[in-house]
Image (cartoon, rainbow, N blue to C red; front, side, top):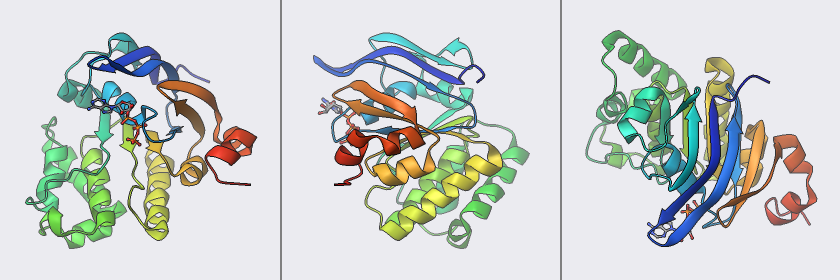
Length: 240
Ligand code: ATP
């Protein structure tokens, strides 16, 4: 396989004295979907925040397209091509759907490209087109998640970091959103790193996976390998 588009090497991240990431290394290859599984508090969100520059690592390297980016400012990392769709969606409730999407393109100045990408987002999420003038706060949870993903796409990402896109959604909506993520991967060759507690949905979607426990990677493999692992079945998939 070619060189990974994103390489994480021995990252350590802290909240004050608390070491939340304890030497994590992983690879994300172009065009792959990589799922990070783990229980509450394992460090998945912290890992995402460290990659997107919201937190600086104390140690280690984050290498994107061959260049070290750890410690760069978050907007520069977006401009480089890594876009973070945060946990809890965090859309701006008093702004319209269209205004939220425009914010996703804040690092860009190619107005034609922005227009084209907005149409692409509306193509993937027709409900957002229908509700384009509606305040985001009035959307359902699933629609807000769609808007958060759409806003991420407006940043023209090479790699999308998705933190718990299934959180709080009904099984039907999870299926709908994961189907769209799969289409984005198939049709746009979009590389994705996905943090999930919904292990079965995440492994079904992903090509590769890592399992985190207490700030460390404890298992990795292809999604198929992980799905067949007895430990994963017992602890994450609820198979008896
Ligand atoms: P969740 O699914 O609950 O978001 P997670 O795997 O994403 O879990 P993190 O949120 O990254 O885990 O948390 C990793 C560790 O860092 C946990 O022990 C958590 O208590 C701690 N932590 C997270 N945020 C903070 C913070 N703002 N201040 C101090 N400690 C924190």
